[in-house]
Length: 340
Image (cartoon, rainbow, N blue to C red; front, side):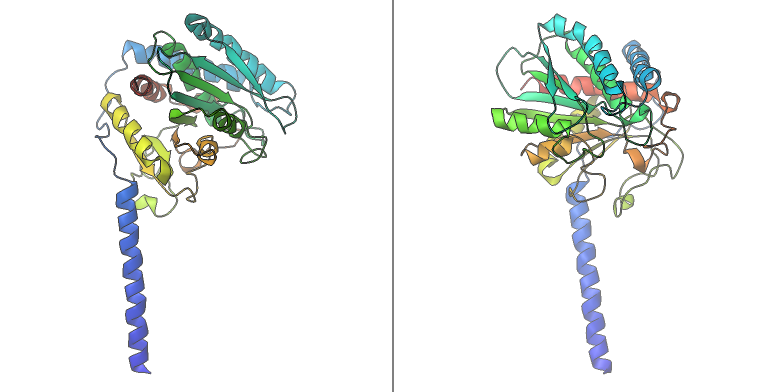
């Protein structure tokens, strides 16, 4: 009996050691990213960053304060948000000779729609696609961070990217119906757009989903993670995260490597199993379903922001200076991606 117990114990220890080794190997594959994350106290905002911070604040205020909850079945709130986006995109469209396409959604009540701005390239080639959802959660939130921040970032990028021509075309899409009860269902705006890309045979150079990007904290313990990620990532929520599935690892490494050459804010990245909580919780998930690599740019939402999906998600909570640093660096990344 004693011999049998020792044998079982050795087997159990072997299994534990094997699992530990596999976990370490998986983390070493998923977590290390090229380049060096920004460290130390950030310098003062550049004039460009200050301009972006002011524009971000203006957009988030208009969306979350003047309009508030933005849902197709909540009065005319989503339509008001759509009109605001149309107004803000008019100048970038005019500057490039582009058109703003309203992509009405099927299988969804209330006449919701994606808004699509195609900035032409000097050559025919794969698209650099930037997306952000502009609807809010169904529980009465004003959605300043989720996803007023991502929507504001996409608006600023549209304006700045339209000021010069690019080799590859850039598409900026504002998605409706990312939030429940539409997420991962047929009425989800990004899913319908991704399926349309697939049906048309469009190639994507990159897809970046801008999702909940404006909440930061330097306090120890302010950043949480699903297990076992807390073993390898910092516990202060002062960074921007780049997240993808294993199939998007190459794109993710390229994007964060480029970002780190320009950024004046810390950054972390992970090409992680899609089954891990949070990894696929935004519009990039839709593009995975259509066979495209895609990544999310995020402050990690509920793993950091205590106002996530609550009425306390208001414009005053956002750190517009740090968000501006992210957007200015992302602009350079997108310009580089659009060179081919």
